[in-house]
Length: 383
Image 1 (cartoon, helix red, strand yellow):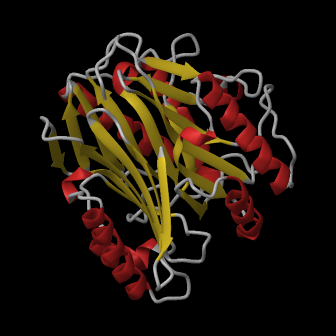
Image 2 (cartoon, rainbow, N blue to C red):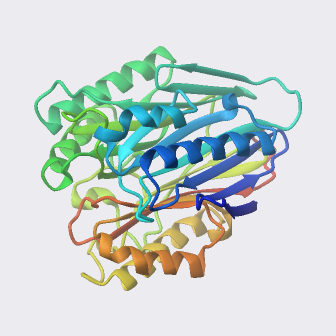
């Protein structure tokens, strides 16, 4: 993995990772605007930064697989954010960057090494990248804001997603690898989302005896004020038996179903030349499902990363393989410590820190990440 970081004269910060593969290179890019500038100035500088990065690395806009924009005031900023939207699979969410900027963005790019056959396709909130018989598919901003409460909105979201998968001859259990579920007013609406998701999973055969899906369920407002729930997804078509492994780290963490929710702590996908690792939102919890270190952001941060390291170890990886992180904080006052902790321990990893309440009020911090490990596995096709 290669890492890079630079700060532009205006103060905009760029951090990126590059995994160089046999046929496809992968980039993860985070850009955080300069604090103290006007929204218009921040948008202009972020736009110029993205375009400059693409040019510098011989990338095109159609190399972008997925983009999320984190905004401080999405209702007022929505129109202006269009200027920094570079991908159909775009995700807008109000989770204020804790750098005191108004906007940050996370971008995932894939770059063919040579003039090999690839087929990126895009549609409404959707990008599909096909290569070597795999199709990597992001579908974003699924919501049904016309329905009254979080249970019915979530049920409709999953019904839409199931039909979308069916059209592609895929299924929830075999092809869906990752979801992000954003819940407005999470303290009041999270339980309805969980109940609806649990019901869908049970109906589709996702149980404690089979598997669930890596996921983050977190506070987040969307462009539509009446949307209580919004979901982004990542699925893969063309996988063979044995390519997916579900990560547990049971010496550190418990099974999620033991406290009434249904998601995998982490998922690893093997290809011929690399292993992708998707770590769900992870917090300060022990193997009995109890919150550790209430009201102590320092110890909760350390335990959260201990849990992530344990999950990575199951995939024969470590923090040096992590190529992107999103850190969610419930309390803005904790940001100074967390920023110092990250700068001291993981300065190279592209990371965005945002204000977003975690699903259990006792958790002060939640961390999600992705990682790539170079492997040589002749059982499977290269990425």
